[in-house]
Image (tube, rainbow, N blue to C red; front, side, top):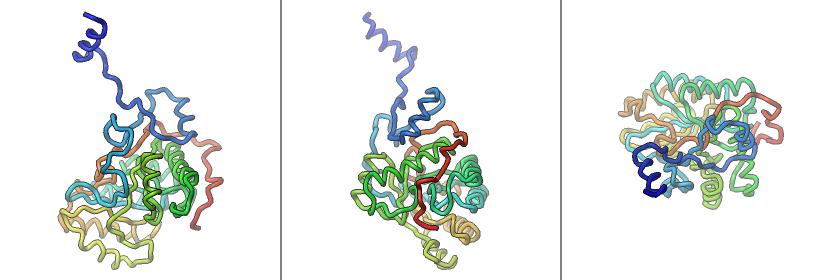
Length: 293
């Protein structure tokens, strides 16, 4: 028997381990790849969006995603953090028996590297919450060059890698604005799923809790919905979110239906998972001027 035939036979019998399909490197910022060079290959894992043989985005995940895929799925998303109210959202989700997705900035309302923000992010992670990019400083992406878009995305990837040991597979464009050219660039260059929403509570536009709840009133199982809220709007974590949970339950949704973005859209939430980093001089928002105060 030839060596090749013997190797094939042993592989079939399990005597030789099959190659790890995740020996694949997603697009990562230089700062992250520099960190990986200091780690053993056993200390981190990389992931494609779905199938290890597919190193791009599957066709059903290209373009803008604004609704989850399965009946009954109800996805709560919170933009513009991390903020002082992140833990309140987390605790309410935990009490309800489900998880939410946070769309985070690096330097929008506050620098993500602030000690309290780091602690809040790690608390949310410890409770199983999910994180997506919402860009570094919340700009209008349609007005940026590709190089500027790269900077916005890579800053979030770097921050979440340092703080949580993850690089997100998804991004929400600020204001929900991204033209076809921008979306295609993000899909292809950064291999990220672009996620918007189909139910806007309009909390960031000054809507009252009562007005926001009217917008949620028609969301009934088995309707599929991705809901937009903001953790930085005090009434949303304090009143709107608890009321929304009760409303969803009265409309036929169970905690199992209340999913993260990645579960609702069926993709791997992170392109990279590894150890949390240790604070050093690189944990700074210098050079990232916030769009909003």
